[in-house]
Image 1 (cartoon, rainbow, N blue to C red):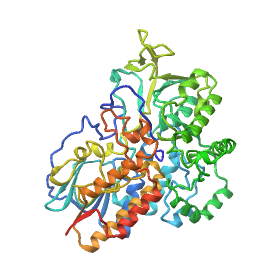
Image 2: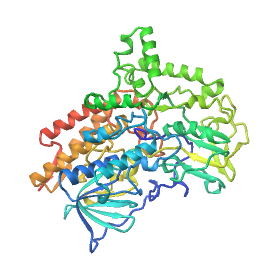
Image 3: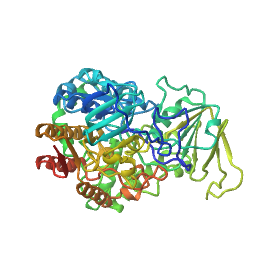
Length: 587
């Protein structure tokens, strides 16, 4: 999540409408998104200064800053029945953050830092959700949030310079500013397999796990997908199920988390060093105080490289991806680290064929979202766990009793005739999200002249700084495409974005500007800069969800900003200091 939990492309089928048991409440796939009529004036619309969509960590902080610090009449609308966003919905077994808990937390309130005690290095979903609920109560946010309500349409009325919102409850809202805190990994996606409606067992999606839980003990379970949510859930499900079958299309690099509980003394020490740790995080490209690289791979001897890789592997966590300064820019440096992980897979997984299937070979390390795990590879040594490669034997259909895969030669993938049926009681889709843009393009969001955002982004997302979109006045996107977002600590990204948006809105209020929007030229320059920075890395060499490759028909464009949160923050601060060049203002 994950950063936020997510998954890579796992199915050979064309994604389509999700089955009823996995359908995101109120959401629609791009193929089925309705074209609603412009919101009609309501006799008594809700009138606001600022409307916020979403009550995850981004929406909560935006509500606090705009309502409490700027004094604006601000209200948030949330589809879930509580705060937390990703952590409200993602309740699957093993759901856990891959940024260390003490940094996956707000830094704006020193007292909050001191009073909240994290129990372990990597917090699990229930603890993160409890933290979100604690913050909501502490800041009295709930009175300004409407829960169980999805914004289905947001249209800009140029004549009145207002955003007109419609919700799925029929409510109408007018607001001068619209702040979208939709989450980069919130538009859940499931493949539209043939026969899905015929399955007589249970079907669940990791991103919409039932709040009451799922009874898995003694059952035959299928997990489709081996990205982050699959890697996190597989070990937990294997301990419960009679038999677990994992359907994998693409093997992923995953690093041991080395999670462990904090002792009282350890956490007291962390609290005493919070200012220092936060300052270090500000200087880091990922927004985390990671152990910095000791140079490029070529700067170290073979023995030094091996020792450093061993140390970071034993340490666990995301710092492994920072072993060499050029790990993401030089293929030979990347191969050294990738080969190290491949060797660990071979050492851990006892069956050579299974180890081979689990070993990534066709993309560089960390160019797809690198995962953290607890016992993932070890799980495949259990007698009750089977791995099926859907690259070699694609899923043909869902049957009333399970899943049918095509027949193929075990070695070369050649079709040998009839398929193979696997019987299950429960099917779990760990098939991830239409990342970064899906939550926007599934909404009826229109700017000047009624132009739809989905149309404006038809060839890929276009933003200025990941914060604003040309043709959409007074719209501000928290961790939007074109910003570091998913490449860093999401909490640090959220705070930086909301603080910048708050500063800009304060500027607009004080200078009497009625409407502000990104200039098309500035937006074009930023989009080119984002692409140029990405092209200097190894990221584009992978068919990842960073590139939209997990969604059929989605443009293959690298969506986040790969220049690092520290450099990005400097650029945003410079733009603010210069009076916000790149924006046009209308009084």
